[in-house]
Image 1: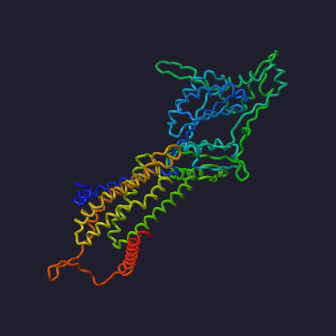
Image 2: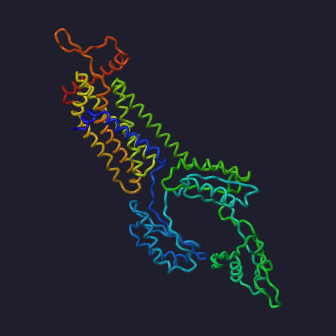
Image 3: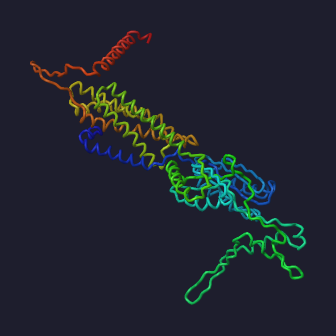
Length: 542
C-alpha cells in the first residue's frame, strides 16, 4: 500500500505521527544552546616551556630544538613553528582540520615525555594547550577601585571569581592587570659581603622558615593524629626578624640588619587603564557546548547580587558582551524567517484563493523546519547563524512539493471527484515527479556535507539541514497534504437537470477574489496562451 493511500485511510494515525514530530522538534529547540557559529576546534596545539633566567639562544639549543625533533614524528602534523624568547619557548603545531585534536594532544604528550629528561633541570614541565573557540571570552568587565585598589585581587578572587565559578556553564574566569601583593627584599650588597653571606644562603633561610609540610603521625591509644609543620609567614614583618647568621662575638644578624623588606604591590608589567584610571579586567569564558546567551544572562544576574557585598568604591563597567551580538544576529535571521513564512503564505493564498488550501500549505512549512531542530539536537549542535541561514534558504523550497500535490488534487475536485478520491488519484499522478524534483535539489546540497577543512565545518551543517528539510517537506507533501485535502477540501455542489445530467451549482454572487484576482489571473492565462500559440506557430524565431 502506498504512503499516501495509508495516510488517507488512517487520518488519525497520520496526524498523531506529525504531532509527535512537532513535539520532538519543539523539545529539541528548547534544549538547543545559542551560539554565533558552530562549535569548532582550530587544528592548533601549543607547547610552552618556561626556563627562568635563560636567554633566547640558550633556550633555542637546550629546549626548543630538543622538543621540535621529538614532535616532528607526531601523526597528522601539517606544520610546526617555534619561537624562543628570554625565559620562554613556544612551539605551535598545526594539523589538518579533519584530524582528531584530542588524539593529537595525546601523541604530543607522549613525544614530550620521551625527551623531558633531556631538558635542563631548571626548566618547568612543558605545558600543552589545545586551542578552542570556548577559550574566547564571552563577557569582559572593567573593574576600578580607589581605596580598595591595593587589595582588589584578593577581594575579586574571594567575592567575585569564586561565586561566578558556580554559575552553570562557566568554563574559566581570569583577572588581567590585578594588583598582586608581593614582598620585596632589597639587600644591601656591602652589608651582605661584610657578614660573609650570599644571596643563595639568604634564600635558603627564607624558604626553610616558610614551611607547611606533613610530618608523620602520632598514635595515642586507639587514636591516630596526623602532624603538620606549619611555619608559614603571616605578616611580612616576620621576615625582618629572621636570623641569618651569628658573628664571631655571638651577635645574631637579622634580616633587618642587611635588607629592607617591602610589603607592596607587584611591579606592573601590563597596565590596565580604564578611563585613565588603574583597573582590572575580568574575563569570562564558557564551557564547550554551553549556551552563550544563557551564561551571559546568568552572570549578569549573579553579578548584580555580588555588587551589593563589595566595597562601594569598586565599580564594574561592561566592555564586551558576545551575547548581544549573537542575540541581534539570531533575532535578525528569525525575523527574516517569519517574513519569508508570511510572504509564502500570502503568495499561496493569492494564487489558490482558498483559505483551506492555504492552511494545508502553511502547515507544511513549520513541520518541515521543526525537523531541522531535531537534527541539530541529535547532532549536538547549536542554534547559530549558519543553521538559521540554512532555514532561510530552505523555507522557499518546502512548499513546492505540497503546492504541486494540492493543485493536482484541486483540479480533480473541480472535475467532479470527491475529495477522498481526488486526493488518492491526484497524488498517484504526481508523486514520482515530486520525488524526482526533491532528488535534484538534494543533489545540489548533499555535496556541501562532503566539504573538508574549515569550510566543511561551517557549511556541512547548511547542507545537512537543507537536505533534511527538503526530504521532510516531500514526505509531508505525499502523506499529510493528501490526508488534509481529503478531510478539509469540499467537493463541487452538483445537481441533476431535467435530462438527468449532472451540473455544478454556482452562486450568482461573486466575492472580491473572483471579481479582482481571478479576473487578473484569467488575463495572465490569456496572455500566456497567446504567447505560447505564437511560439508554436513561429518555431524558427523561437
